[in-house]
Amino acid sequence: MTVDYETIINTDLSSLSDAATAWEDMGKRFGELHDNYRDHVKAAVEADGWAR
Image (cartoon, rainbow, N blue to C red; front, side, top):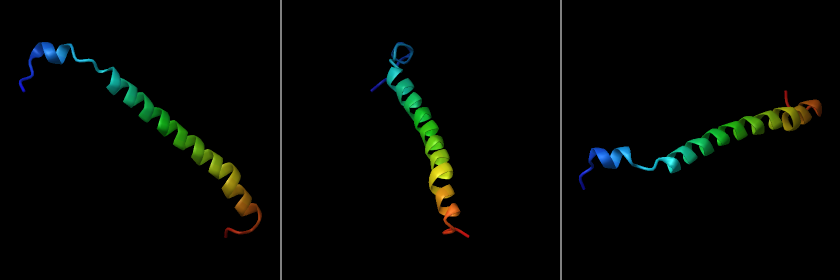
């Protein structure tokens, strides 16, 4: 399959943009999960003396 200039210029990249946005959102979500773990789970374990 030959790819020419017109095909490249007119390619719909919206799905790639959507995937990049979803990837960025997932990174933010992992940050939120990290904060939640630190503030709630780890803090509770340390407060109960389970962690050293």
